[in-house]
Length: 206
Image 1 (tube, rainbow, N blue to C red):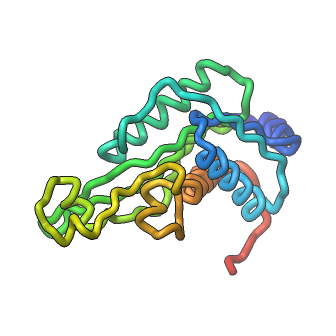
Image 2: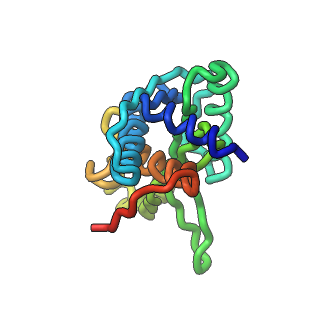
C-alpha cells in the first residue's frame, strides 16, 4: 500500500500531464483511449488535463476475435505487460485494448456477444474495464456457421472493416464504433483504478 505522501506525489505528477502508451497503432483505438481519459478526468475529477497517448506497434497480432472473455483478458494483459517490460517507467500508464466474443447458454440456447476490454497498468496498480455488450444477431451466427438459410445469407453483410469502425459500427449502423467502445472500456477501467485513491467533489448525475 502506498503512503499518503507517495500518493500525493503521484497525483502532482499527473497534474503536470498524463502520458499513456498504447499497445496498438490503430488510430481509432488511440483516439478511444484518449477520449476515455478525457471523460474521466473532466467528468469525475472536474479537471482539464493534458493527455498524450503514444501508439506502439505490437508483435502479437490477433487473428480474428478471441473466443471468450478469458482469452481477451489474457491477450490485452500480455500486450500491456509487454510494453511495461520494454519501456520501464517511461510512461505513467501502459494500456492495451481489444474486442472479443463471449458465449452464454441461456434457456438452452447459445447467445453470442461482442464487447471491448481495456487494461490499464499505472501508478496505482492495474485495472480492467469493458464496453457495453452487443449481441450478435442470429442470422449472422447462422451465416458464420455455414447455415443454409436463404434469409440469413441475404441479410448479412460481413461486419468488421477497420476503416468503417469495426464490427460494432456495422451492427449499430454507425451509431457506435470501435473508438466509442474503447473509450467506454478505458473510462470504466479508470473508475476502478482510482476508486478510493483520491477524494473527489460530489457530482450529481444529470
